[in-house]
Length: 280
Image (cartoon, rainbow, N blue to C red; front, top):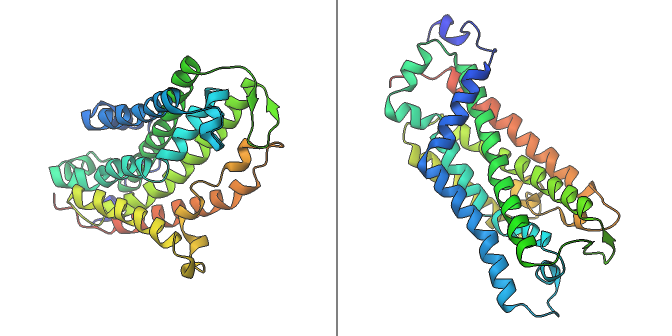
């Protein structure tokens, strides 16, 4: 690889058109649209199931849904964060570099010249937008179907105190933001894996497999020494957001670990990609 390839002119200027084009291409893919539809169906299924079957003595989030529809969104996020969101993220980031290489467009894209650092940065930004969009889709659909089928107004928190609907939406937005950062950590891991292969399906499967493996390791008590370093250990650490007073202390460690994943694996992806011979 030549010095020009290593530091291409404008490599650190992302360019709004390039970013918009990448995000637009991501959203136009039928497969990604189908994933969003599937994620949207989860809060709908939860709301209908609770409406038809839950009695007034139900506990936890399920019982809270009957009191206020906003809890459909919270419950749906609890359901999708461990598996469904990592799956949706793995599919997109696994294809980010490996897909370009597999279809033969990566070589031409770099010949523009786009610059390898710039290309990676744009791919990571697009992945971040996708992470936010998946979590936001579940939350918004959950609110809409929840308030359509269940009461609205004062929100009774898990601590038993009541707060306003606006405060409930604010708490939900915190959970969405937290889920986005958690998924961005998985996206950074997937981006690195995507630079190691030219087979997008292999990158997708490896990313999802690692995400699931971390959850398995987190479930084994004997592995407590490594569990604080696993992103899966913090995926659902937002219960304090649903209590009064609102506390973000439980989220802070998870956010630091997630940002650590982003820095480490984005750097590893950059080191690998900028030294890689692109032959296709």
